[in-house]
Length: 367
Image (cartoon, rainbow, N blue to C red; front, side, top):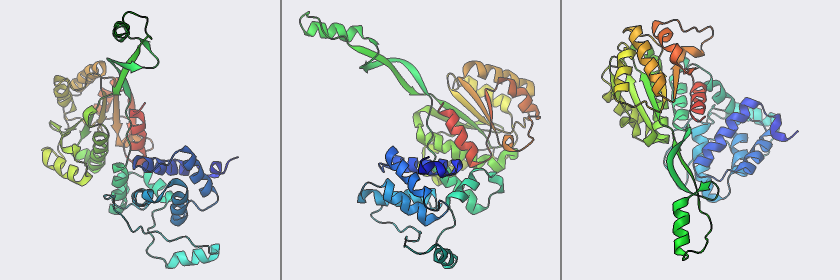
């Protein structure tokens, strides 16, 4: 059994997510370095911030140029600090590792008030807690994690071709090559289909019944737009349909949320999903896309209209995913009129109440 197999499965997921964050920031944390990181932590205390920090710094960084980026990513991922621009040096609130006995380390930990209490185990707890039950500090930490969320996208095959080493015969390029050689036989040229990210259209319910979850939903939408600006459309739904994609293209989450707040005219109102879906289908925005509807299904309009528009949507869209925050609660049943009308035309009904639920949703969008 290798050393990294002795770590808990849930903890390994958090550590691998940290490695992916480093890789996205430009640190060459390849597979071998990640294995060394996990092997080192198998012999240390994964719940200790200083052990995680030094194990990662000694195994994942390739040179001095990686240290500032490593410190920034570590602070944002584990300590819940706001990620800022790259700087030549940055002070990170961690305790420097010294070879001290285990008992002395436990006594010193009680007196060290500068070390932030956000450890791997705490992050794992926050991942599964309902965002409505978090403190302000915990909610801010979850929002920072959402800002760092990497959202891959399902790829779709286009009608265009590109040259390739393996594929089908490219007649035009082969004939041109033959003519260039004066009619002499030439090497066969091949081509293959191009792929591009499949579009995602997200509808975020900002009505009164969804007020507690609306901010987190919009921050997840911001992560989607930042990952694929050209392949993502976001609308708010309430008493009217409002396109907010342009506002969410700001790189800074706080700036984007402020812009969205000013663009949505129907915060905490009612919900008329049937009429808004009809407007969306009139715009032809959903054809061939993955449509994500984030709502609790409290429909104030005609449920029959909602059912008819959902039937049209299911025929036009590639997939329809319904995100209901209450789905993550034990004993939930889709009993509201809106959910009963929409459910026959939904491909997947998923939860949307916690950071872990949004990470699972991002994974579904990549499949």
